[in-house]
Image (cartoon, rainbow, N blue to C red; front, side, top):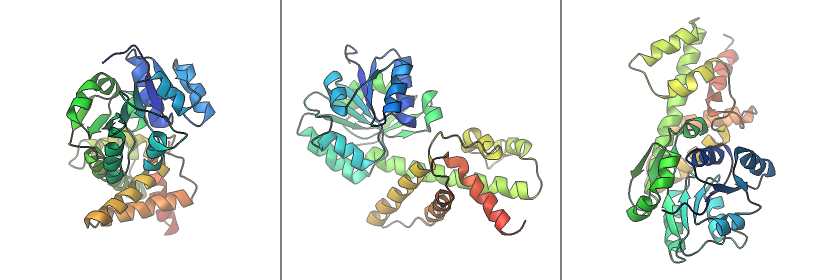
Length: 295
């Protein structure tokens, strides 16, 4: 793969900025766009090229990483009249968590324009991705993945090819469901331990050595204990993902009772104004529920 052109990044939120940092660290030139001017300015401070539009990214770059919020935005960038205007020989690496059925259909449509579309949602929050610990869940043609490996290897530590477009998104929804429930379980367990008078920092070390261990304890445990909710992944993003899980589950006939309960917890947090905080803020909901019972 040629590196004579910069790699594009469209969407410079928490994840997009972490991806741009990974590419810059690997020696790639990066040209990026976000509708928020301050995010473009931040990319320039990091050493990237701030573009004024998605179209400019497409003009500068043949390989473009998408890190936008949802499926609507992916479709708009690729197909709207004011989108990126990509065409023959462009490769798109879409890291967003999207509706897998719509992504499958989109990949087929843009292929007719000569666009090589690779679905690559990432497992990992922005901090994990910035440190190179993300995992890409790939849907698309294997030959496209192979041609994009220099970029994928810069973005994450491992890539799994799961099948045609849509396969990566289906895997990502299942992964995110388990991850969200792990956060909720840990928050409830910590709140329970706290209500019984246990010191949470040493108790967290007990948890890490116990049969209950999950990696969530490593990256969310102290944030919950210390009420440190500076965002690595916005809670609103969790609600978007779990809403999508329910939509897909309805199509395939799968009940998700635990996901339903987690969604209710997230919605309560957002009603309390926690939407732009880290998704570990579900700990606060557990504490609120204890206080509501007078304990």
